[in-house]
Length: 155
Image (cartoon, rainbow, N blue to C red; front, side, top):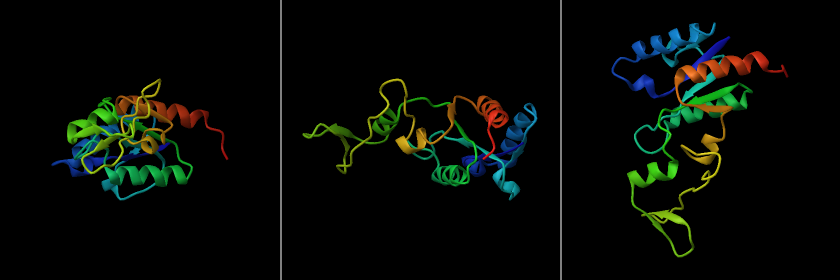
């Protein structure tokens, strides 16, 4: 099984070291990790959904998640930052409750407040709910992706 390792790690000072570390985790579960800088596509998808340059995840990774989902790939995300999207947005900008009851930023744009119940949204609704599972760590996400792959019914 191959797993594409999507995430903003490509912007690190030494992205190859991080890629090697993630690939090593994959081998623990009999999977082959494909790092973006390998210039190879394929496999199921693991997405680092941690905040990147703001309250939301890396937009390039979000795009890759969408492509993977459209191709019928298993997409599993991870983020060690489990703070709600509302809280992260509030830390990044001023939010106020408007007369219409909506929580809004300084530009008047509504901020999603979904997920106050069982599901805690760590990012935009479409992103947080667009994965098979959101895990706390890369290792947990790799294990989950492999388990899902083994139980998947071919289309």
